[in-house]
Image 1 (cartoon, rainbow, N blue to C red):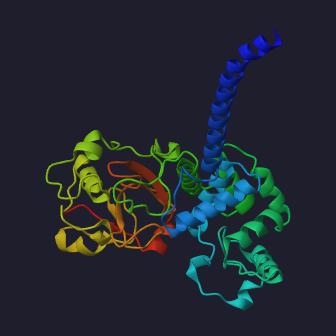
Image 2: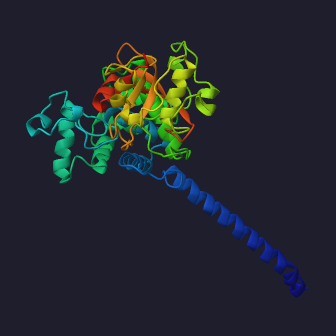
Length: 364
């Protein structure tokens, strides 16, 4: 009887064990995949230095127990402050030791552009550790563990799970800049944070097309809520984004192709052969357009080659949809996330000045 019972149970044990093995294997694979995505692994493969910096910051926050939403919100603020460059000194000034180690303001350093006493304290901490202040690990360690009450604040914010609200909380509570309540400054950070979350967590990156027209400051797929009642003219239609307008001589689905279409949709015209987006600031005057360093609604904006993180020798071009009283402006653009993909972005006056952006009128 015992032998029969054993013989009867043997196939069940074999089948059950096999099924269990398969289930465990699937769970392990799923677990590994989830961990890799959460750490910016399989979902995001950096190709530029700024993307590598972003991934390093993201992974550092996750390793410290922060949420992916917080990591991306912090990145959104870092992008607006320094372009996610740990070596950035405010206004790209040279290093001056006597100023750097003082409590003087207007000379901010690093990812979060720490200024005054916080900057000096970070530099002294780097010296104590025998490390270079320009590195991401040193700055992340200092901000997370050695910045007094601000480190406590960061650790508290790191548990939040609303990426856009966390970006605003970081701006208002941690950065505490004079522009912390400015809607355009908030929009810049929310868009950047949302985009980093899309890329690092959801796996929706800027791949596709040439993959070269990302201006470094992230785009959103829909017009920001704060601008919906400000933009009175028609939003981009399907012809501007998909089929194109007659006479368009630019490469299909690219930034130049879209801007030509956007002009045409709103009853304007721009020369169809101005070259790459980064060259429009040089070629426009000879082809019936005016140029300016001041943002103007319903003009194009040309990003010179290498003027922002992520740009290469071709530069970029976008359409100015709205200009704020503080000089910041809303643009629509294409081929940031891939050919035929249209996005929105807010750029501050300082970012435009630092990058040397040139604004191009429609033809006279």
